[in-house]
Length: 598
Image (tube, rainbow, N blue to C red; front, side, top):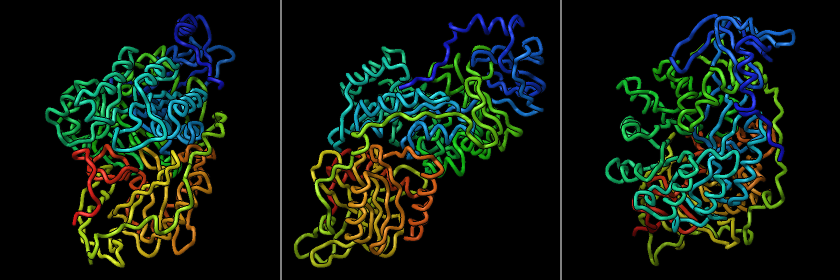
């Protein structure tokens, strides 16, 4: 690994002082811009920024005293000078890209800092997979801070992962240079019930002086929530309504409100600021999960800020939520998050605060993007063979593997069915009357079959159930080795033979997403690294992802970004009903439930 060399403040303090005082020349001066000061919530015209050693040395009405014969001068021409945007909670793997290609995709959108939790790869490759993500992150020209995953499995006893994360693993990772804290603590019942391992992981993080990420995916804001907060998580991004945001902030947490590819939770929570008038310092914008198509076509944190503004938020407040609030939360206020002396020189030039068109991006004092084009080198990690061979199915599957047997003599059954909710992570626990043919329960109408195919330990296991909400028609199937969080293989389809074709195809290519209809493959997104990511450019992956979504629509699905819904159907820590390699899980009670009720 070649880590990007960036000087710490003590190493360059004398240089910054001398430049600010006019005793030494700046490396770069941005002149004649509107200084967006997120500390005071002001937009101050006719200001300059002087940069030296990758950091800001001076900000004021004129930096002429900092200019030398070799100083690079950038004319802002009255544009806004904005701090580089920070994503407070996200998963690089959800972009279907490696850290290098994710960075290349988001840099032109003004993202210069990310706080990423690689718990997807942790479930597949364990601590070694986290180390690979961490190492490639440190190679990039922007700030990618890694949170050590906390929960693999996310719900012990409810699923089987490729590897498990221990308290000892957490303690070890806290010593790595790029680890900023503990990733989202998804086992919220464990924390609320004082599970020793969960508390040991939190304790190891706090002893290291780092931040504990939260994930409280329950509507219960009573004693269980209070117990969770008492356990140590410092933020939470699972809120879906104003009451969630208010309660988190009242209890001393940061409320992280997200706009991802499929999660639209900003509009319903930002009213705590825009209408109730609560202090915005404790609210942070994030994406959580964005796939490559969103990154290439719509943007990243600039998209989230624009959306917050469209929801009635003052532009300067929205920018605080994507810069200084995030930096302060992670203890990095002296490093990133504002355009003030000593901080890393992460600067955006934009002509409009509301539309937030990103014209120039500077990261650590270097121009890294101009007019939507990434100019920086984003080096790749040398991903080893074991990371590229993770789809370990015991055998080729056949249609019979996806059969759900009816009780003897039944002509119809009542079945528990996972209900997809558009634009939200939670599902509904539904029941449907389904027909029986030759002893097999049949998917019909709006109900499709879902299967969880084991791919980590070569057990050959297939768990079958039912799902509604996708609207699929005809004989089709969609399979994905992106199956949060255990990342086995999720197969959804209306025909058992098509489901077998799709599953076997992903074994052949080493992981990814595929859609079959009437025996023909309509789309394929190859994700050879851990079955989660591609190291191809984002534009190429996005084009295949777009074809995949077109294929979903061709099969009758009209949900917004339905792929994200598909990929979370095995996430057994978000209510109400999910599937795992061990069975159908009622997340309201954290108990297994039968597929056939009667």
